[in-house]
Length: 90
Image (cartoon, rainbow, N blue to C red; front, top):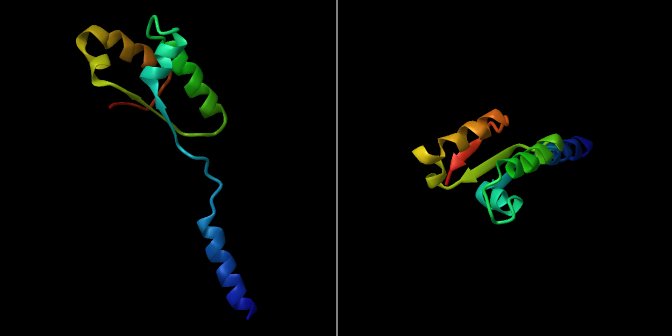
């Protein structure tokens, strides 16, 4: 009987993890809100990403494709310089 209880307890324990949830950020909206809807603020993205990473979460940022056009190459460089490792075009 105790063996069965141990087996069930081990199965339940394996299902429960201490991993924190993945944080998904709509980086375009964050940047515009941080820029008070007047300009795209990369700093706003940095603040949000650093906050969640500091608290032990993995972070993924989504940006629309048009932000990766030739006119916006600087944006991609700035994000890279801010050590935002994962960002994806939506």
